[in-house]
Length: 177
Image (cartoon, rainbow, N blue to C red; front, top):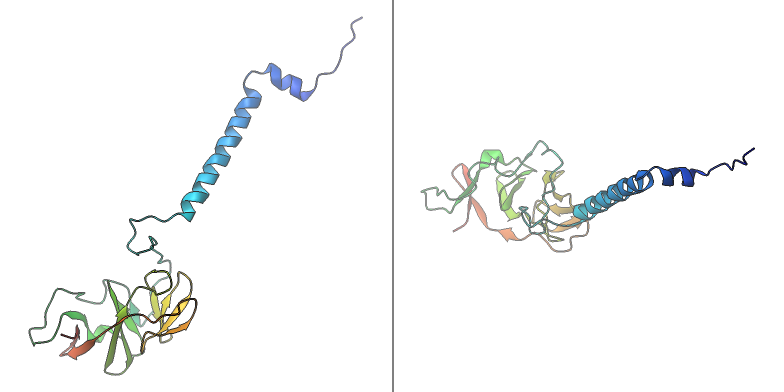
């Protein structure tokens, strides 16, 4: 009679060539891919339109504000009436709201009063994303600015948005000459 010793799972796995190492390789590869994806998500890509490489714009533009490019002529044109470059048709800028253009935010805090500010947040250089409740909003880090003077209302931004002089010329808001 032969004395039979039971074999352990480890011994059985060693008999199957490549089984244990294949499983180990697959798990290590999956872990490596996950680590690479996590690192890629933390990095910045210099191909973005914002100075810090982000293109955050997951929120739809609310009523009363307009996304970049939707506000009419964003530069290059002239009114012919002696004014500056046409930024946007005044009718596109809601009272208590504004329009986000390629480089500026044009607001109308009160009927017939137009203001313009840089659309780059002073906190970390993200572009502002919307105008809501009479505030210019940067959703990157939740900074809020006044539509009246570009000053920070809340959030991490401590400096106001840079102002640009504008005026009403006929039916258009133009950069002051």
